[in-house]
Amino acid sequence: MRDIMGRRDRPFGGKIVVFSGDFRQVLPVVRRGSHSQIIDATLRSSHLWKGMRQLRLVTNMRAHNDTWFADYLLRVGNGTEEANNHGNIQLREDICVPSTGEMNDIEKLIDHVFPGLDENMSDRNYMTCHAILSTTNDNVDKINLRMIDRFKGEEVIYHSFDSAEDDPYGYYAPEFLNGLTPNGLPPHALKLKLNCPVILLRNIDLANGLCNGTRLVVRGFERNAIDAEIMIGQHAGRRVFLPRIPLCPSDNDMFPFKFKRKQFSLRLSFAMTINKVQGQTIPIVGVYLPNPVFSHGQLYVALSRATAKRNIKILIEKEKDKGKK
Ligand SMILES: Nc1ncnc2c1ncn2[C@@H]1O[C@H](COP(=O)(O)OP(=O)(O)OP(=O)(O)O)[C@@H](O)[C@H]1O
Image (cartoon, rainbow, N blue to C red):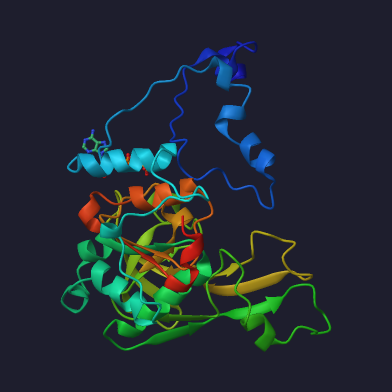
């Protein structure tokens, strides 16, 4: 930009650039980064920050029909909501699913978030509007497996082809490789049913709306392709065929070998991680917290996906209640 504008002394060659963001949300991810490295990666730490003019948006448009909820979100995000002696936010009882410590607590949360699932299974809008959020991929996988079992229809399982790239002597058995599911990769056995919601894990075709985080519903199964319909955004309603593609973990140091998985770049999306849904609106939200959130920002992102207090339910598992945030 400086070269084009011929003004090497000014940031962006003197052009006005608009940055937007909400500092209450989850901070940038720095792999294995320390607190200071994470802070260092934020816009506020950039040398450009001192030259920026700040404008504030003051109305929460997503929750504009529920001003109490909009204020509550601000209190959570600003750290002014009532906290206990450990500095953890006490979540209000009226937005929590009572926890008994039994396995069926999760079923109760599912019933709250997905009422009338059987009648609405093929409705794209229904699937777009309902989701359960949690902190880690393990928690999310647990809910997704329960949901796909409850979902009506015949199950189809696509298995991946896994290999260790730099293993000429075959030290790593296929069964061992199949058991690995590094972050950001689909599972070895991808269990799907017709009309189930899924989320893309890679950028495949940005121009046609197929990018990391795109939510789709499965409309058909082929031997080596999945027929899916895009759920949200400007390409909503478009039908696409998704192929199996070779995928490697984004963190190369995770294993002492180069792991490659050929699989559909999809995961079920009845439940998703809080980090994955940052930026999305999900009108009816369930939050599953078997363990505390990592930061207030994460709680703020989870709660602020919803449009009103009545549309949110949180399950905090009882036996781990002490550390709740
Ligand atoms: N001016 C507006 N009038 C009506 N609705 C609006 C307006 N601006 C935004 N919205 C709605 O509010 C919701 C959130 O908008 P958007 O995703 O642009 O906000 P955001 O600041 O990026 O949210 P977040 O960072 O929390 O994900 C969307 O459903 C959008 O349609």
